[in-house]
Image 1: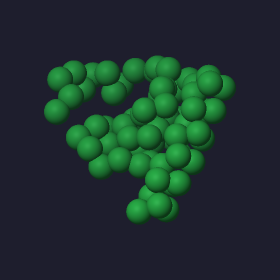
Image 2: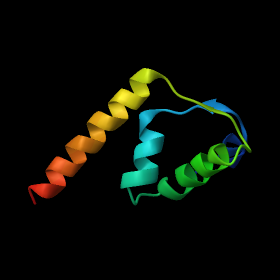
Image 3: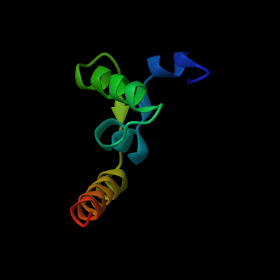
Image 4: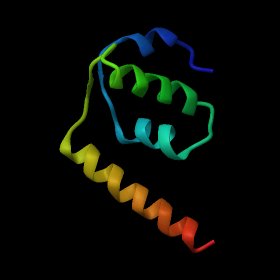
Amino acid sequence: MISNLNLLNVDAFIDTNIFLYTFKSNNKFSRYCGDYISRVKYGELLGFVSPLVISELFYKMIMIEISETKK
């Protein structure tokens, strides 16, 4: 459980792992990350990303897909 859920109520920089937990993970953070991204999507909060985060996200998503294809 996240110890301070108030962090889900602030505008913030969104790192690659937040997107990965939202799209490709079923761990204890996935629900919280998905909720946060949804709130940004619908304009309740502001989320900031950098081009590096987008690049890293695409790279990691491709690597995940490749590893899942090899199974």
